[in-house]
Length: 388
Image 1 (cartoon, rainbow, N blue to C red):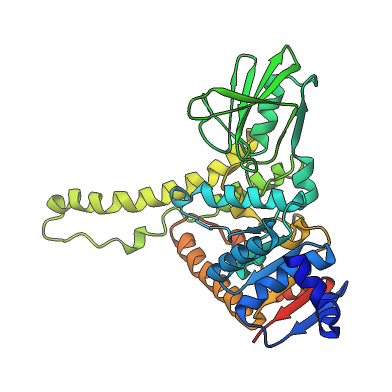
Image 2: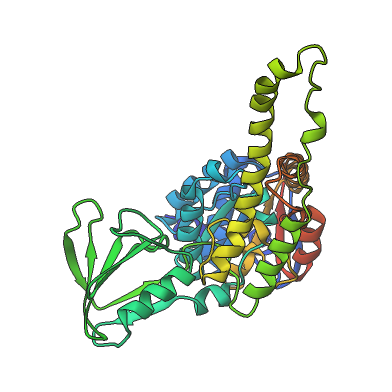
């Protein structure tokens, strides 16, 4: 259907002008209703045979665009949610991160023709895609790798080692069998070894733990979005410990209410009850910061390591670098700018509270880029703006 419509439109000079996207620079399109923009994104990807990154002014608009593009293309479109940022460690969920990893791997592999995302997804500091690919592990039946070495590599890629794999991002070693569930894949994988030779590779059901279909090869990708290279890990953990060590001993203690003079002994237990939770908040915050450094020293990749992106001057990629020579569509660029500015402002408010709770350090304030940073980088890309 889409190809038939494109063939009918091809004779129009306006079509050629609108669909011959520049290699570099900006093309502005006006008087486009929201429903037309998803069609244009799908048609542009089909006509140019290039991937399209559609940035929408809201999460709902990005979801609608992804659904519409998938309908036009018969699949081949995906929604990439913006990452969730939680400095309170117990609040964070891995589902958002796992969904992003799965979509990004499909996009990097060329399976996504139109990638739709809310505008604030543009502000994330991301692992360069070439490093992401270099860290992956590929195994084939008949190949060789020690099972212990495979587990060690998976742990360094952010996998959680467990006794039994039940969910994404986990790995387990049971004798000569390695189970692992890559977040970028739809199912879990079981590798059976004979000494250091890969004897068989099978998919398996994490619920029943039963082996399923045989496979010729398996690829395991990192289980976290942001990793630190082994050569940079010492500098990262030293920075974390240095910053945590500079936190004041108890910033909340001066705010404690004074004890009454007339019955100090009777009030002492109540004062202790008031003071203990305040000190516990501080101690827990610092210990969680230091836990990231301890895990790095043990050769692990903490799941919260993405909170330190930007803390060191390490290479970080833009979202569009995960696509091969993409065309970037900005759906209502002024609304995109406003959403990005609001996201940065909201992050700064959350970050300020995290600093007060001793759950963050000042260096983590560089976690997000700004819209101005993104606009400057976009000058090297092919950009199309769409607006009423």
